[in-house]
Amino acid sequence: MTATIGWLVNLNLLFLLALLLETIVLTNNVLMGTIVGILIFVLSTVIFIGLALSFIFLFANAVIVWRREGYSLASSLTLIAGLGVIAADVLFFFDPIKAPAPIKSFANVFLSAIILYILLTVWNTLSSMFVYQWYFPRRNKDYIIVLGAGLIDGYKVGRLLGNRINTAIDFYKRQIAETKQHPKFIFSGGQGGDEKLPEAVAMQKYAVQHGVPTQDTLIEDKSVNTFQNMKFSKQLIERDGGNERRKVVFVTNNFHTMRAGVLADRVGLKANGIGAPTPFYYLPNAVIREYLALFVMHKRFHIVMFSLIFLVAVLDGLMVGQGF
Image 1 (cartoon, rainbow, N blue to C red):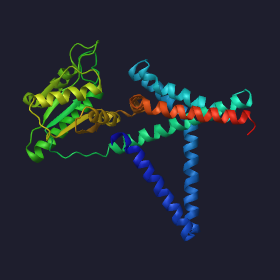
Image 2 (image 1 turned 90 degrees about the horizontal axis):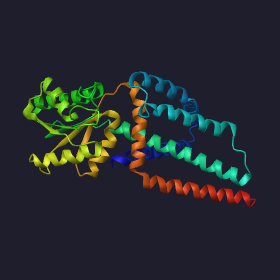
Image 3 (image 1 turned 120 degrees about the vertical axis):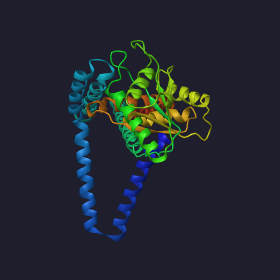
Image 4 (image 1 turned 90 degrees about the vertical axis):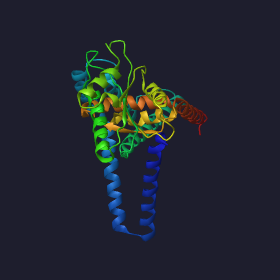
């Protein structure tokens, strides 16, 4: 359900738009039709110009991320996306492909369809991420899983990870105040090659320093990715005596909650996520990374779609070559 929520929301919006247009036609409401037509035109124009010029924002964001996070492939995703936007602009505005008509037709259809497909899947991912933020959990949880992130200088909790822990602590304290029920924290994160201790240990120390009793904490210090975070945390809950009626919530950064929820489903862990705030400058890069990770998770579906697009483009090229 988590992975399809964006498609459902967007389909509902399309049906609502179709219903509105049909209502305008049936009632012959000229004023309403004019207003809706103007709004659609303005919105379409804004979106088109925004997409065409989005490389400016993406390049500027890449510079900001480099200054604050350093130069790396992971911090250069907005730069790469900006270059992709420029390539799409060149294809759309300048018709750069010079080749015989069948090959040119094939290339134009294939590249245009791929660009449209990527735009649709990006929009669906953004919609899903946005809607997922509307989850407001009841304060009746038995476990709060806090997902790890990298440590600063190999041992310190940084701002990104600190936001996750602080969000979890806030939920913990509010639940106790409302219900007197003490949930247990599960700090989940192993030790990276450049880290001096497991992330889970550093997270536990941070939480204890901020008022969480040690007896309310558990450590999962073997995981190296989000899938293992969920899998090993589920196993830890079972070892701790948690049964099928246990109530679990996980905490990560807001851009990461949807993919973490998908992976929780895959390991059989019934849990939804609370999103901790993320610095705005970091969000574009993080959202692109999440999109790519989700794209890879559903690679079989995307391979089928790319294959269908390729076949349609080949057929178009053949038809042009035959004079149709």
